[in-house]
Image (cartoon, rainbow, N blue to C red; front, side):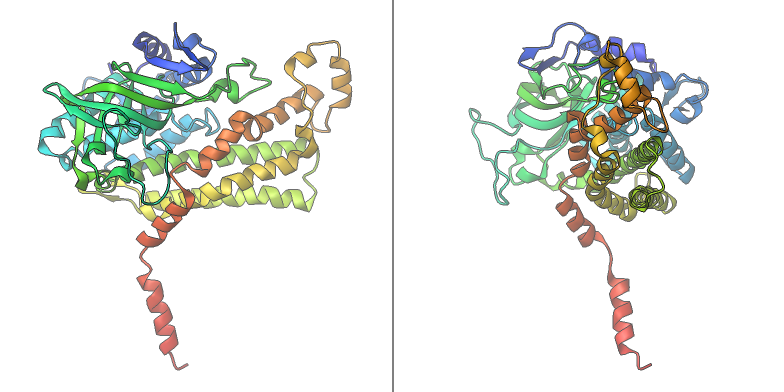
Length: 481
């Protein structure tokens, strides 16, 4: 089967009838018709359709066999510098369809599935075929995945560890083992697009690593009995207008809590089971973290370019580009774009193969880029706020321009660089990216994209070899001249 079309994707998601709850109601009928999900599902469908476009197919697919069957680029194990370059180009091609605002486009978790599948020998021998089979099944059917990665935010004190009985479980844990598989009960957080993907990937969380009941990894279909997705409020449900909400209406992904209500995970879907020694190693030895980080930085470069283009468009429209403080704000966006691009290219240029044959980007520039962007993104957003100033405060809607007050709007909201309706449309795009509920979520999302910023900075410091630079200081102090 391999690459699918957008229509095939929508048909498949609708047929799953996953248990999804939103705004106090269980979703019924087709997900692709539901106000909360139809925008993002249509946008994802368009990504799948690009795979069949002759102009993009070579970038977005690869041939696995001599029969001409094509697979999605994210499932290809990069084994050379050329492979990694192609992966970057494909990732950014998809990202440009949303200005980098879809954080969980299919290639993100598919990269994880590829990395784990290519690293199958890392796992216990009894689980190696499981990992390979899930990977091959996903590749063959062009599946989409969500994933869960943190426990409920009950107690974030440094030494808290949940010890619970079967009756009062909060964080999802193993509560039973049968001939058919393991039984998981409890909850996990932040499954972006939870309930509107084919499957869910579940990886271990480090916080409960002292208790083997919390140590597991597996992938299961999203319609597995007992699996529920409790979604946050949709930002897209109140509008279909791409004029009023150009990003929200298309790209709101909807995040969810995943509830495992005595979910039976078949043994042939288990990757890791009660192996305390593998909790961190599953990310580091397979290089899963860095392959995901490569995809993320590729997307963030595209998003920065979108912000820069938007900022320059605002400035040109209202004729403020001659002011030095405006040039300063836009130059900050340029600097961010150049820094992120340079770090991405450095990581790619200095990639090395790991023991599983995967060409892995250099972690150091990727970690630097991630740490930098998580702190910098909010400043880019603030620059857009300052460029648009009061222009964001009173923005009419599309309906206003189709009403008796249209003549007034056209007269009083025109700009030097655009008539009123075009000016308002541009400003609404900037507002939606930075000030709407969707935009606020984008800022918070980038701020914590790969985890707590302070913890990530600490990890960069601890992993970075500073010996050479310390020796330079020691040598300098010993000099007599």
